[in-house]
Amino acid sequence: MSTSDFLPKEYSTFPENGSISCQSPSNIALVKYWGKYGEQLPQNASISFTLSQCRTETALHFRKIKPSDHFNFEVYLNGNREASFEPKIKKFFERIESYMPFLKEYAFRIETKNTFPHSSGIASSASGMSALAVCLVALEAKLCHPVPFRQAQDRLVEGQLQDKDFDRLSLTKANKKASFLARLGSGSAARSLEGPLVVWGEHPAIKGSSNLYGVKYEGAIHENFRNYQDTILLVDKGEKQVSSTVGHDLMNDNPYATARFKTANDNLSSITKVLENGNFEAFISLVESEALQLHGMMMASKPYFILMKPNTLEIINRIWAYRAMTESKVCFTLDAGANVHVLYPESEKETVQAFIQNDLADFCKNGEYIHDACGLGASIL
Image (cartoon, rainbow, N blue to C red; front, side, top):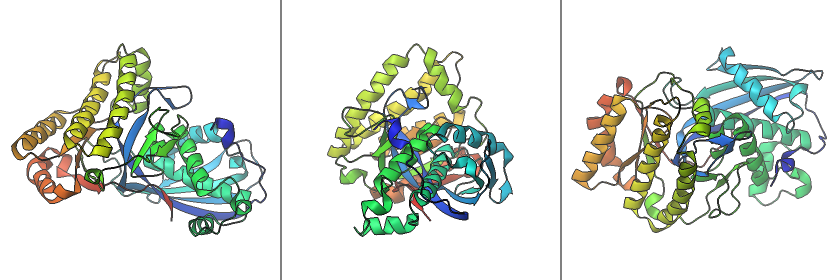
């Protein structure tokens, strides 16, 4: 598919007002995306676990107005006006306007809340932007046809939905468009629409993969990796000294960038085999290497920077020691920050969570961590 496939057809109806609510989760990359080009396009393909508990819930209230030359919206977080979020939403609307030309014909009230603590150190851009994108695609479905989006979902599942009822916005195409739009707000948001594993970026080993949107990983998944667990250790809850946007841009002059992009794509090829054969040791080696390479790229940037904290390294060393002592299959990965994602199979849930409580919690800010697991992506509420 190309960008022209996401341009809208003529709208047939414009509801006067209403609201749409949805939820969308965050995700954690196993093979990392770090470096982009053009308009939010990845320099290498990535694959991520979709999370379940760490999600954003968004209600989009809309009211028809006289067409304007500017966007009319307000953002509320946990019931309070959050004007600091609005410049980012404005930029997002500017990027997607050609694909959602009705935006200036409505006034929007965007109400959002996270199931994880605000300023907890968990990036909410993936869950937040994907949740908003799902709401907008659902609204566009109303404009294309007066079939309620949730009703259309139900009828599609039951096999009763005719093409004339829902046209190009079938559930699959709607997910692609939502992922396509979400990417324009936050690159990693493209991977939050489905689950439990999603690939974003063109890759010869992944049929249908695209730089424009994420696709559900349809390869074989060994039972070892089903319902995988992720406990997020909140090492640092402050604002990062270097934003992800700046970090991505610094890859343009990173002397190791070309080699990194090749390694990432090679690792994606490798992990598809690991996911099929259930080899824990290979999974651990690849995932931890990817996490450290991500932060190695930050340290090799010009200017260089470090987002890990001393407690990040202490946790990593304790995970290594615990694994050597117990032969556990627990491992870690990192996002673009100081927090540690502790990954482990469901069969070790009780023992690893005890280890986290007894040995790792002291290295978290205020002893805080969040137990999570693989999820299935976004949904209309």
